[in-house]
Image (cartoon, rainbow, N blue to C red; front, side, top):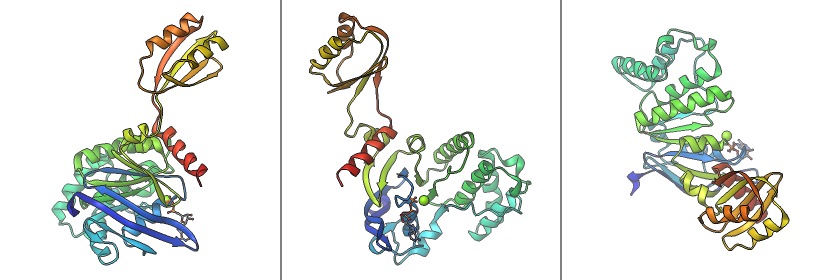
Length: 314
Ligand SMILES: Nc1ncnc2c1ncn2[C@@H]1O[C@H](COP(=O)(O)OP(=O)(O)O)[C@@H](O)[C@H]1O
Ligand SMILES: [Mg+2]
């Protein structure tokens, strides 16, 4: 069903002088998702966005965005999407409200629509009181907030945000995360967001694809990715973890591996086994326990595992 997918790519490929910047990409982004396109620098994220907007022609393959073919209907796609690429697209010498006014006119919005939308978005972003200020004097974080407002001003059905927090200090980045979450809840649009920051994807996205060297190496919800190919872990902090104690742990069927580093005993578990019997065993063998934690790998650890595993198999 075309309508349930905001984006579908089929073998989408773009070469640059022998590099497969985007390499036979088959990707689906359902309508209404906050999709995170996650990958290290040079992975092919920006090139993919350029292809999806018809700003670059594919070498091989094709894609549909909002039901339109990127080769034959790029104008329609650009008319119904909002885009924030590397540049904010803001006019530094204009005031905040004049910037939005300018874009509203380009999108053919009426004067009353422009005013209402300005008030709504600037209000949500906490910028309404500052609407008369000249943008050039603003901090990078505030400009980036306004750039997001600019990109979504005309209520596009789909928004592309290319590394929206890149170059922001941690405080401004986390404020923008909060704003993006609020906007998503309020506007309900489909978002295609690229990032090399895994914590960002984990916070903002409900669907994630990991891209490396132009190819997708993982796809799913952050929770699915986290559980992909990983083992549950337990950590026991303490002292007196003797070789005999470690040997006894290794002999247990529910333990796949034991690793001792300083005062930290890390256990790889074979399933979601209960920890109590293992804790008892440690105590029986003379271990002095300070703290016990059940481990859950973060998306970052899973991502790193995936990337290194794929490297090894090359
Ligand atoms: N216009 C271009 N000419 C030549 N190579 C390019 C061009 N744009 C991107 N590339 C190359 O394609 C690969 C993917 O780049 P890009 O899509 O910008 O990655 P990302 O956005 O994930 O950092 C990189 O190796 C990059 O050097
Ligand atoms: Mg990029």
